Image 1 (cartoon, rainbow, N blue to C red):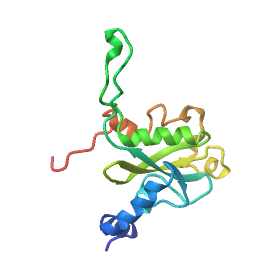
Image 2: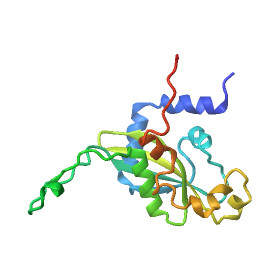
Image 3: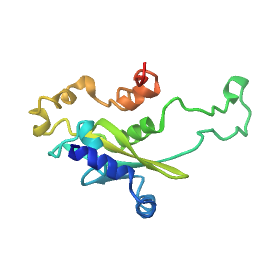
Length: 176
């Protein structure tokens, strides 16, 4: 017998293409960072620490896909400064978390997860925590965010997606 969250996960995977097309069109026409009432993928949000309580906020973010190549230099520079770096060493999810952290300055990024992609954009949902909220301070599982050493986690590369992009969270191989 499957749990409720297993059914939610399967329903997310089996969404019809017409539903996705309409949804992505709405998301595409909205702002890049949007505060949402409740998570779109409830199963994934709960697995990453989301709770429906005051002090926890979810934001949806849109990130443009493609290479991050800088424009070519028109004026003179010494050869060391002429480089046009193609690859940024972060994944799109880490970029999304950093942008949300800069938008919501008084909140802390707890985690994030993938929502969708099309030919031009990626969408992620980021779980944010208010470290000054009394509900968070009294919660034993979440009050570690309230300490000063955990400020601006996303900007310092301490979230799971950023650590994964640096090779610190490698997924285990199945079968071995």
